Length: 281
Length: 234
Image: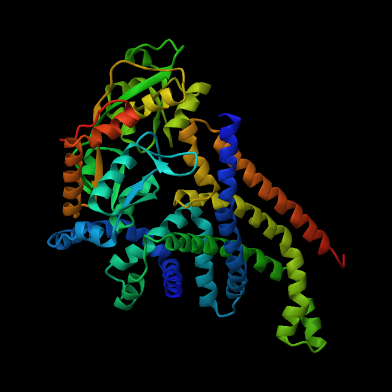
């Protein structure tokens, strides 16, 4: 224990010395990791390592209800957490829920602080490139929500209005790539709840977000919001693993399919969403 | 939010004042002595030492603390992977478990300490340099050695002069501890941020603000008391 503290302190001193160097190191080492990738791929011990350590470290943002969020006792709960817990039980390992900063999730995965990202993460091209994604397990739509008495009833009414969106999310990417983007003013903020609050206070006219989140927040907090008919793009959620961790990814995927077949996945989905909305095959 | 929910949240936040105070206390414990050392290094007559110290202070004061906290977290894995890293260093750092909570805390603390030491160093240097040269000459004439002059004549006056500026820095630190929530490290601000989506309300953030306000008020009172106590020979 003492030795570890010493090592940490030593690490810190080196870190301090190299703090200037790391800035340039950041972009350089990213290239390194991809360059070094083929080597360990030959011997993929990712699954064995999880089984040996007897723990799967799940990285999540812990503020994305109902997929993975923090309850009033500061415990991390949600649909994804229940599913991951069942997967871990079947693998015979402990589930460790590690809150991470969502902006740095790829880094945390890369350096090995976590084993997977499992938090209602939408599939997109950039994530496909840097992660080894599982098969999609749920559909999600990107929708607009407005206050009930706003007078906005369709997506056409949004012209000239201000729309809030979560910064760094796939919702933001989709909105920016859409045709409607030229006609609206976009304000990007850190999380969906703040956006909805701002809409309520009149800072914006609508919020663009995941239907899963919108439905949960509206019913759970009995808010007077309306979801506009139609969506910009259907999305899918997946679990993200390190690029090389094929064995671990395949094992989790196999257990998910097994859970779908024996009805456990449907049971968890019913608990959170009222019906089985998972798309695992 | 109902009053019952507010009470639950209040209890939770009260519990997590401990980690906040832990960051605060440890940062002060290490950064004040380090700041004194850095101040002396900066005033070193051997110029290269003074220059290096200047570069350190420039980086620490010139970049956001939030960024320094993040860099510290990822430094160890990146140093191990880099090509220029010598083997003995790799072996030494290889034993560090980046998944442990103690790693997260220690690296965060290092960033806080290095950052605050730079600010304290400048405050202390200002204090030391504000003492007129004539006092050193007078002490020398009375037969005081250089060490005696510093510790018995200069330092007591420096302490009096640096208290107002230091209290400013210390009160800022109270609020800067909230940056740890971005790591993330579980303290008051982290709890507040994570409870926002649960209640779909911004009230948790305001409650966190109240906690910081209370700490800052207590410290303000404490420092005005200390300043009064030190207000002798005027």
